[in-house]
Image: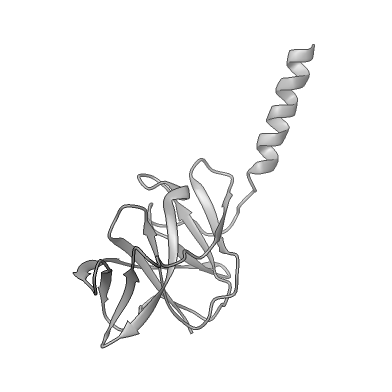
Amino acid sequence: MRICCLALCFAAAFAAAAQIYTGPRPAQPDLPYLKHAENLVPTEVLEAKEEKGKKDDVIYVINGAASSARTPLASPIFVMQFDKLVAAKLSLYKLESRNGRREIIFSPKKPPKAIRVELTHLNTEKLYRLEVDESLEPGEYAFSPDGSNQVFCFQVY
């Protein structure tokens, strides 16, 4: 009897942790989509190139001054179906737009601070909602998996 009650409690807790999602589904796995009402807008998928900066700094450069994926929302919501990428290893950074390109500097003395993103597991195995915890200023941003130069760019305007 105790085992049955314990199993029911775990099942109820697990069901409560996953939210029911009835909105649009991502067309492609491992790609964050901006959620605009009932539409999903794919982020721009690129590869950041490493350049040597001052001293031990590394500058990651992305071609183009602005992303083609744009949102007017200061607190954007994303939907992403994970397959090969790991949800907890995806970081969000603000980029600087300079000389017709986007860049971010990683310095051993002062590394850039990742923007906090809340992950919510939705009703399917690997479908998540990603919500930015703070309001974003207008500008260029990119998600990047830890240890990878792959970036998923978007612009807040």
